[in-house]
Image 1 (tube, rainbow, N blue to C red):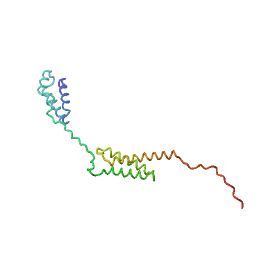
Image 2: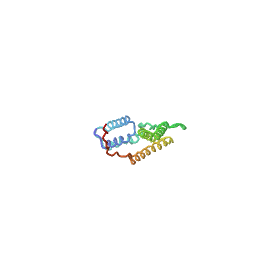
Image 3: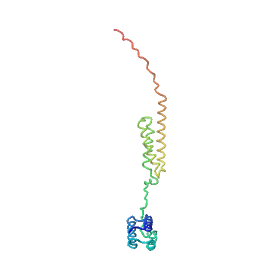
Image 4: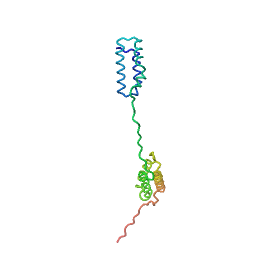
Amino acid sequence: MSEHPLVQAYLADLDRALVGSDPREHQDTLDAVREHLEEALGEEPTSDEVRRVLAGLGSVDAIAAGTTPVVAPPAVTVLPAAPAPGRADPGALVALVASLVAVLTLFLSPFVAIPLALVALVVAILRVRRPSGRSTLAWSALVVSGTTLVLSTVLGLLLIAVGDSSPEPGPVHSEPAAER
């Protein structure tokens, strides 16, 4: 059967109406309607015959309503577990301890204190940005490690500004050794 323009339009509308249905049932419904139209219309149907057969099928919305809709699985959002009330956030506690150790070792060993403060700062920022980031420990670690880094920068700049204040040696004159 050469498809009549009304049949093509009906099938296109049915295809659009079935968008929300199960994909397998979508295709089965289209195939069944197409097969029914081929049998009912024959080789060269007139426009009146096509209209009569399509009216007998009913509206595409009625056909689509009889199919099984695709049910999307419910969206599940998994949030990290918040620490129980009264219990400290272990990550924030580690960040706070690391930032306190960094500030205490700043004057003894800045090569240890600065990287330790950077790590504490990163961990504290990550703990604060969590959905349950209302942890006082995380905010404290953030402040202490940030202060340590600012203090180390100020001290470094101060040392550069002061410079080396040891006297410059002048030319060395050696006296001849006394003869014996």
